[in-house]
Image 1 (cartoon, rainbow, N blue to C red):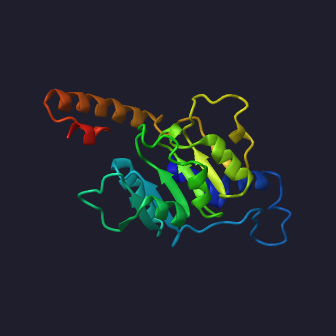
Image 2: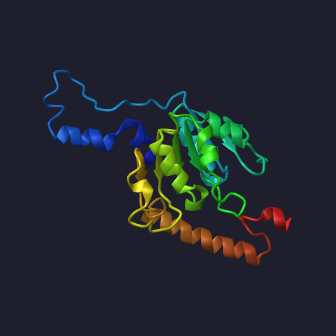
Image 3: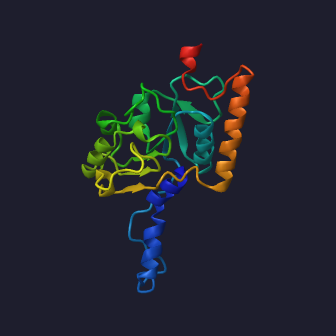
Amino acid sequence: MVFAHVLHHTQHVASHAQNVRNGDWASCPDFCFWNEPLTELSDRTFGIIGLGQIGREVADIARAFGMRVIAYNHRPPLDLPNGIEMVGLDEIFAESDILSLHCPLTDANHHLVNAERLEQMKPSALLINTARGPLVDTVALAKALYDSEIAGAGLDVMETEPPPADHPLYTAPNCHITPHIGWATQAARRRLIGTAVENVKAFLEGHPQNVVNADQLA
């Protein structure tokens, strides 16, 4: 889902396909037609906040596109994968061409992406959130998009789900929202059930997995 949003914003597949249906390519004097700037991912900087299992898999895909991968995690990982550079929060907001969120929601990171953080981002940057809706202050995000503080946003999660019909992000420029479908394939749902079973078994055996508040339990 992360790269579905990334490619939607950088290659504009849907709008170009519609242009073809509308006859724009057929009437073009050249062999190639495009109506929006296209962005190559190679050599761009991909930032990941939350370097858990999902974050690491996203990093692998970003590297396959030839991107520089930087990451922030609230606890430094003990086994840092090759090709990932750990940075601080200020650096990841300032340096990322694409910033993708992959951390659990806690009291400490509620509205992690707020007006102040959005101001730190590049005007050309893209924000992706497929993790938890309240990680992003969506009112601040809408304002940032209207003010061209960042170039776009791709969201599969919202603060309230479903969001109200008058949510400001519906009309914000270059904001594309999918209805929390990143988990919804049959294969993903089967894995989710299996993971839940394994988590319960591990807890009963005294070695819980995927603990959000591990610092407090240590």
